[in-house]
Image (cartoon, rainbow, N blue to C red; front, side, top):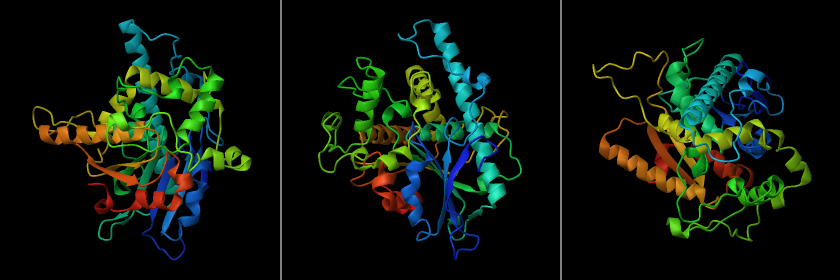
Length: 373
C-alpha cells in the first residue's frame, strides 16, 4: 500500500480481533539496508498484545516512491577528504538539513494518511490505550528525530496528529546517529574504516552490527571488536530466504541515498542538530509567548523513548551513557525538554526485533513505570 508521503506499507497486521476502537498502532520505520521485512517476527505477537503493527519501507526501498532528481540533488556527494572550506561546509550542511526536513514531512504525511485511510483509533486518555506509537530503528531513528525537530513547521491537516501520537521510540540507534562525537579511545566502526574497500566494509560491518557483545559499565570496558561466540550473530542464524526477504542493498552502496545521507550527516553535525531538536522543546520568546514561526502542534507531552539492547555494538551503551548525562545536565540547567525515557532489553543485540521479538514489542508498548531508572 502506497501512502501520501511516498513511504510504502510493507506489512500490516490489521486491527486485532476482539478489540473495538481502543487498540494501539505501531508504525515502524526501518534502518540502513535492512527494510520493513526485518520486523516480520513481531507480527505473530500482535494479536496477543492487542496491537496493530504496520511496518513501513522508506523511500528508495521496495514499493516506495523513489526520490526525484531534485531531491537527490539535495544530497551532497561524500568528499574523499573532510571539507575545510567554511562556505562549502555551511552549504552542504544546509542542504542536508533541508533534505531531512523534507523527509520529516514525508513521514508526517504518511502518518496522517494512514490514520485517515485506516481509521486508526485516537489516544484514550482514560484507559491509556489507543493512539499511535512511532518507532524508528537504527538509521530510521534519525527520521523520527527530524519529525520531532520540525513538527511545529507542519500545519495541522485533516486530523491533528497530537490526538493520536503518544510515544516516539528511538530503537537502538548507535551514538554516531545521535550526533555524539566519538571518544578518542578506539572509536571503532567498520562502516567508517577507510582502510577497507567498500566490499570489505560491507562484510565486516554486517557481521559486526549483527553480533552480540559483552560490555562493562564504563567506556573503557565497552567491547569494540570481539563478539561473543555464543550466541552467534543474527546473520549467522538467518536462512538465505530470510536474508533476501529483509535486505535491499542499493541505497547503501557508495553513491546510494542512504550511504550519502549517513556519511554526510555524521560528518557535518546534522545528527546532533536533529537530536537536540527531538529532545528539547522550544524556548519561550523574550515576551513570554511561543515563537510565532510555529504553525503546528509541538507535541510537548509526547514521550520520547530510547530502547536499547545491552549486547548491541559498543556505540549503543555509549549512547545511553551520554544521553543520561545530557538529560541530567539539562534538568539541572532548567532546559525545557520532552518526556524522555530509557528502556533496556536484556541480552539483546542490535537486531532485537528479530532475535527477541516479543520482548522488543513489550519494550515499545510498556508503560513508563517499566522503564530504566
